[in-house]
Image (cartoon, helix red, strand yellow):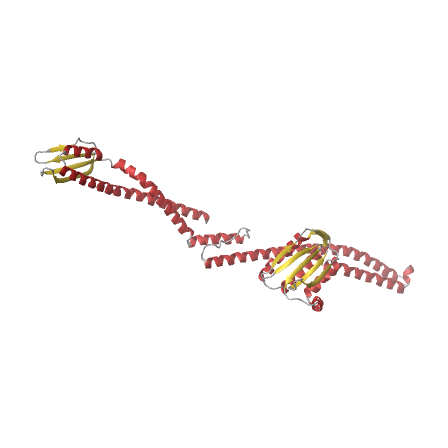
Length: 412
C-alpha cells in the first residue's frame, strides 16, 4: 500500500512538471510577440510625430534604426531616405503614411531584425522563476488534496489496524484531523485497542501466577506424599504385626489407639500444609513500592470501567520479606472488595507511613460495629483476613482520617 502511494505521488509530480513547462513553452512566444508588437507600435507613433514636426528626417530615422535594430525607408515624390541594411530581417514589417513638416505625403517602411531568439531567452529568464513558483504551489496543492482525500484516511486506518492485529506497541490512530466524527471514531478505536492490550496483559499475568502456584502445589504434594507414605507404612506395619499377634503387638487395644493417634497426626499435618494450598509458600524479599505497582497494573482494565486511578505516595523505599503467593492472593481479595465499594471517578491511594502501608479508597464509611460484621459476611474480606493470619503480619480495616472512605493499614 505504501509503495502504491509513493508511485501515485511520483506520477502526480511528473504530470505537474510536464503541465507547467508545456504551459511555459506554448504560452510564452505568443505573449512575447504581442508585447513586442505593442512596444514597436508605441515607438512608431512617437517617430511619426517627430517626422511631422522636425526637418532633420535622416537623423530621426537613423537614430530609430540604431535603437531598435531596424531598417527604415522613406519614399515621397522626390525624396527618399534609407538607413543601412541589416542582416537577418525578421517577420515584423510596418508600412505607414504621414505628412512631413512641409506638408508632403510620405510613406514609411520599417523592417525589424530577427532578434526574437535572444530577446525571448531574456524573457524566459524572468518567466522560468515564476513558472517554478507556480509549479511548487501546484505540487503543494496536489499533495494537500491527496493527503486530505478519503484514500489517505483509509491508508492511515489500514496501517494502524494492521499494527493492532500484530499487537504492536506503536499502533495508534492520529485524532487531529479536524473532523469531529472521524476523531471520535479514531479515539474509540484507540481506547478499545488499549483495553484489549491491558486485558491480554492481565490474563498473561494471571496465567503466570497460576503456573507458579501449580508448580508450588506440585512440590508441596510431592513433599506431603513422602511424609504420608512414611506415616502410612508405619501404621500398616503395626496393623500387620497386630494381625499376626507378634510380640508386643498382641495387645491390640493399646496399639489400635497408637495407630489412631498416628493417623490423626497425619490428618492434622495434611490439613495444615495443604489448607488454601499456600501455607508453606516460599519467602521473598521485595521492594514494597515497586511490588505494589506491579500488582496494581493487573487492575488497570477493571479500574478503567469505573474511571478509578491509582496514586502512590512513598517518601522512602523499603524492603520487606513476605510470603509472595499468599500476599498476592490477599491483595487480589482486598482489590476486588475495593473496586466494588469505591466511588466512580475517584482515586485509590497507596501511601507509606514508616513501615505501614495505607491502601485507602473513597466510598461509604463503616462504623466499628458494621466493620466487624462486613469482615464476617463479605467473602472477599473474610478470605483476605484468612490469608493475613498465615502471613505473619497485621492488617487493620478502618475509616480514613478524612472520613471520606475506608482504608486497609498493613503493618509489616
